[in-house]
Each structure stands twice: as structure tokens, then as C-alpha cells.
Length: 90
Image 1 (tube, rainbow, N blue to C red):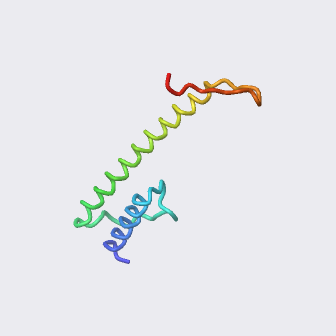
Image 2: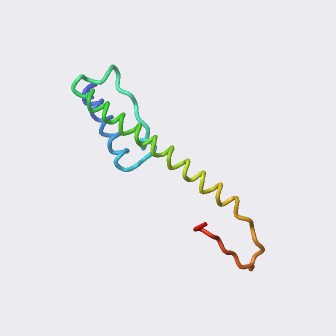
Image 3: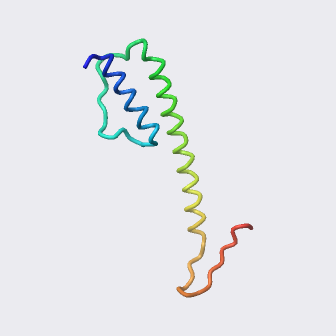
């Protein structure tokens, strides 16, 4: 496979992973030799920007989950069978 085709295939792989919401590229990947061909540079930048946005979104989601877990840890445990009420409005 030429470097041109290898770079195009790598970008295809990254784009498919982003479209599926995969955190990692299934099966890994190998960087083609040399820099990307000039006609693929804009596409590679777009893929990079999408990856950076996905990373940022994962960080936001992680922080939200951490807040929710912290809130759950503050709920006192009750004996089994005891009525439990959780005020979610106030």
C-alpha cells in the first residue's frame, strides 16, 4: 500500500471510530511512514479536531459521573427493610 493509500485508510479508520463513539481504534493502528500527503492534511486536521472534541466531551461526562457518585456516597445507608426517601428537589 502506498503512503497515500495508507494515510487515507488510517483517516478512514479514525473517522469510523469517531462515528461509532469508540474510545480506541479497534485493533490499534500503525502510523504510515512519512508525513501525510498534502491533499490529506486538511482532512487529517478535521479528524484531529473531532478527536479533541470527543476527548473534551469524555472529560465533561467523567466529571458529571464523579459528581453523581459523590452525591450517592452522601446518602446514608439504612437498614434493610427500612423505608427510604430521597428528596431530589431540595
